[in-house]
Image 1 (cartoon, rainbow, N blue to C red):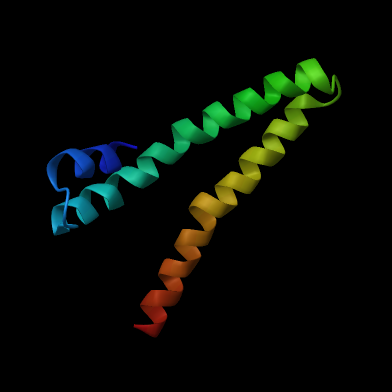
Image 2: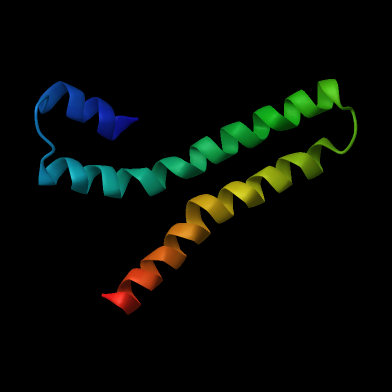
Amino acid sequence: MAPAALHRQTQLTEVSERFVWVASKAAPREHFPLLLGLCLEVYLVSVVVAKSEPLAVALALALVFGLLWIGLPRRERGVLKRDG
């Protein structure tokens, strides 16, 4: 959220190289707290609603997010380096 808020308040009509740099550096750092919060929320809801294996559900969700947010971008970066 930080890069978008910075952009909306400082550069309303253009996308600058600084914004791209800030967004590129901030996004990976913001994934872990988001992943942790979402998994804890799913865990708590699973405890109340499902009452069965809530930790397994939260860990599975963490694995899916980890693959999508970390594994997939790293794989694509490797493909771009090979092709480029």
